[in-house]
Length: 188
Image 1 (cartoon, one colour):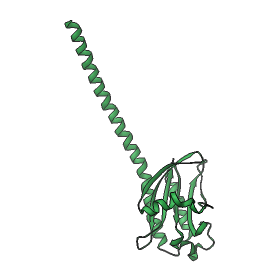
Image 2 (image 1 turned 120 degrees about the vertical axis):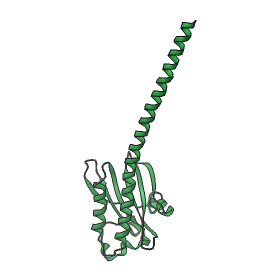
Image 3 (image 1 turned 30 degrees about the vertical axis):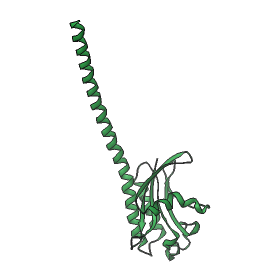
């Protein structure tokens, strides 16, 4: 009986030590993965912030051309491995669509919104596409929702044609600090 008790003690002690060691390893792996995820996400959040600040600066200059806005979103997307798209969109109330520099611009969309978006295609190529929506309520959730909250946010994932989009958004402001538009950086 003493031998059995001794063996039981050795086995349970070894098992407890193995479990403790396994917990340590799993905890370390979880912390490492959490750091990777945080690092991954913070790059997209920082990009949305940067595009919002740049959009605010461009908006303050009525002579800034649509091509300059377009270059900002394209260049930002090119710098973000794995991002699906980068956009700036402005409300009709911002008056951007009425600026002489935007006369005839491809970026003026329904209801005098201005939408500048660059997307990464399946082939990896970056191109501008349209944000236009024939449905006046098409902008309610993804555009006006974050704009009304007046703060940076993360939304998604949203299934769009079989691709899960998650987006960091931030507010583009006029010189008085009022929200006049939104930036978004989308990733899968």
